[in-house]
Image 1 (cartoon, helix red, strand yellow):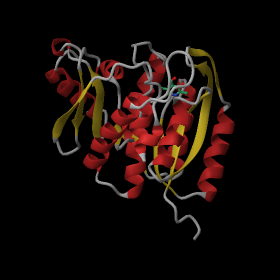
Image 2: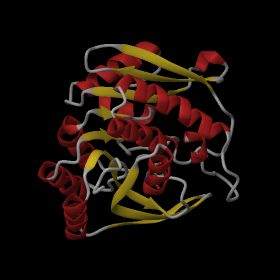
Image 3: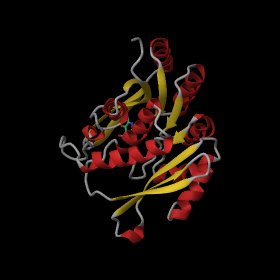
Image 4: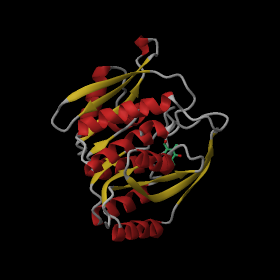
Length: 268
Ligand code: PXL
């Protein structure tokens, strides 16, 4: 019986309001029937109004988290979320090279859905040049994709050229999330997928007008990690992640006073 249940890890920050970061990852993992462990690198104080403060964890503590998890668990797939700063990214890369946690999904938490930048330029360069090449998949939102590809993304064609640029850093598969075309009366959201073999496709969905979207990106990448751990084909995993995340947004949970969480029970 030892270690027979599929296990995955999130390397991320804690969000105190439970809607995003490691908390959203763990909710997603369990709903998709994999057991999630968490290597926390930071914690933010936040509630439904927003984030007020953050603390990064000591590097030797992060090393220790990696060590104890690797000693006991058989982690089949991993994801990175908020990594905080350049030093922490270096520590995470060092540990990912030391321990085999299976396939890696890099959710490049660089910018919020509203475009605010969360990492310094030095940290972004490290993420681009050293972490992305270790990834099977990366899942930037549109702002993160613009920063990583150093270009604007205004059209479907721009999504392709940006994805190709991001793929050129060494990550095998790229999903760019959340373009809201200006010409569609804002009622469509488009994701774009560029696979390792060059296959490419769009994933359009109807825009859902809601304030309950916290943790959407974390959830999307967590579903992909869970499915990889269970052996689901990657294209299917990405499509499933899109459908289930959309469903979780549609039926958001009513807590807090402003920006709320999505509903991970919809991932079952
Ligand atoms: O959803 C992005 C994200 C990731 N990680 C942490 C966060 C957030 C957004 O609030 O707080 C810890």
